[in-house]
Length: 371
Image 1 (cartoon, rainbow, N blue to C red):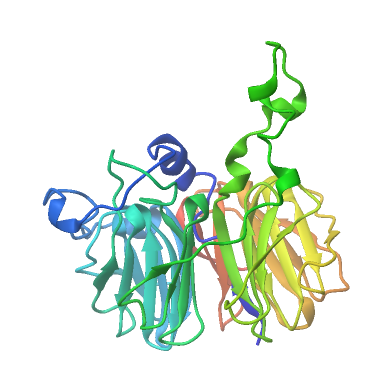
Image 2 (tube, helix red, strand yellow; image 1 turned 90 degrees about the vertical axis):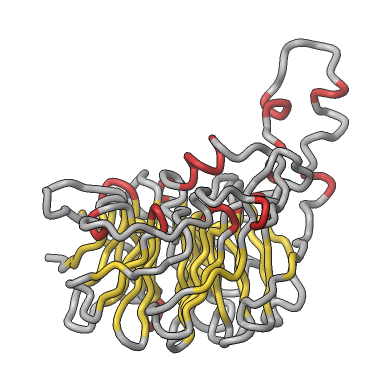
């Protein structure tokens, strides 16, 4: 079966506000004992009557149906993808960005470094990790939100996030270890001899104005091929790959300097990334060579799923829907209209066994049957 990773986060609209507006460049992990009891990170999520119509950032198929996450710690469950109920007892009100499943085990990640776990398909939840930002900050990734999760089995998993936050667990999330990904090559360092520090002029060329965030890019999406290869989609043209199920990692560059918001995969080496301004890049050799695919749109792409034979469905801003039946077919454009006849931002979608899709994003979750 092909594997996929959606954009769990609608990354340019929900998290952009929090990551870039409220998180300073540096942050430090906070002990929960020092948090105020009314801190949203530790408050139990409120059950709200219209949660299904609020922002939904990610969803996943479970053994018993579907689970979806969103703002204010909302976590929704459904047996059929049509009727949804809000889970009770979710131990956070932080925005949740990502959800993944292995059997009946579910893991959720979000703001304030929160990671939650359910051993029973979403009926009960425990908080495994929390990392609320505090002013005594030192490392960029401290306090960063979780943007995606991937578990290889019930014990071994990864969590990625803003400022190159990269975590790994071998005990089902009971403990998480921070890992470091390879830095950019020295020649990519924008603080080199041609930078502002060595300039005696108050006029700047284009190279001077390049931002330095490429050294700690936000990690937006993570996927695994059927051969056990891993690929991370990141911002500013950065990507990371592993050929050995995450034991070792290599930094690679896309032929485009913009951000990729998600990644889907098929068999060995076959990966597709999508992101800013409708850009899509595909590789059959795990990133040694990339080719840009024509999409015909400029709307950013936020989520996607892989189908057999290289088929793919991608969704994004302004209700954008792109689909292809196989790896040799071009993408066909369509538009999703909400029940209110709007074209909202779509964060992702899932196949529905009765045909069509379960779509989710800016206007909540809905069934979508392309015409």
